[in-house]
Amino acid sequence: MSKIKMAVAGTVLGTVLAGPALAAPAFADDRTCRGTIRAVTVDGVRVPAGASCTLLGTRVEGGVKVERNATLVAREVKVDGDVQGEGARAVSVTGGSVVDGNVQVKQGGAVTVTSSRVGGDVQLDANRRPLRVDGNRVGGDVQVVGNRGGARLHRNLVEGDLQCKENRPAPVGSGNSARGDEEGQCRRL
Image (cartoon, rainbow, N blue to C red; front, side, top):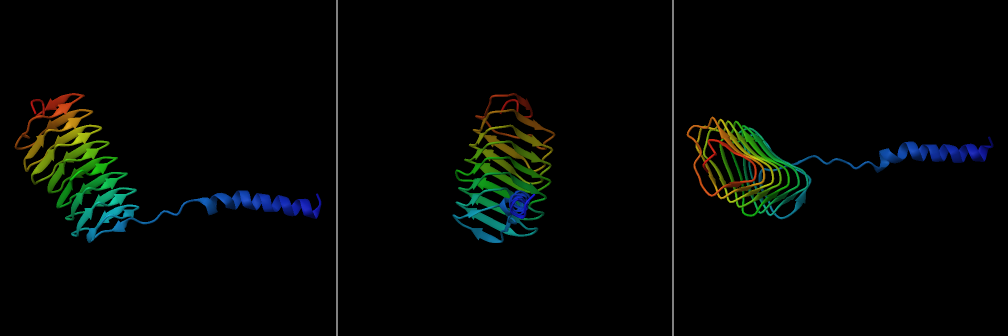
């Protein structure tokens, strides 16, 4: 093979091998929130342990993670991923917010999901403070399991199942509509 052909072949091979590495998107870290993030676009949000975060009109292209003893207040937000909290003090998603994924809060405190659209599930598991799920459109299931602070479910349109069990006291509410099954403690809500 001539030197010119070898040089061209080497350049092509180098471009093929290096191309994907150069073209791969850089993954930015989640934005840490202590305080308020207003109407801007961010990749993801992390509320660190013990912190408080308010999102006002924020666009989140990833998810929102609320850590232990942290508080999230999200109003008029658009989240492409999930809103998740484990051991969070409080999680609030309100005011016409849109969450394309799930809202999942477990082993935490108070949870409020009102006047919002959730593309996936609302899962509230083993929380200790009052729960309020009012006036939402939920594309998946609403599951309220093993909570101890009381739960109110009112006027939710649920595409999947409305499931409640092992909550003390039993959830209260009315005007909910589920295309799937209404099960357990949610059967008459």
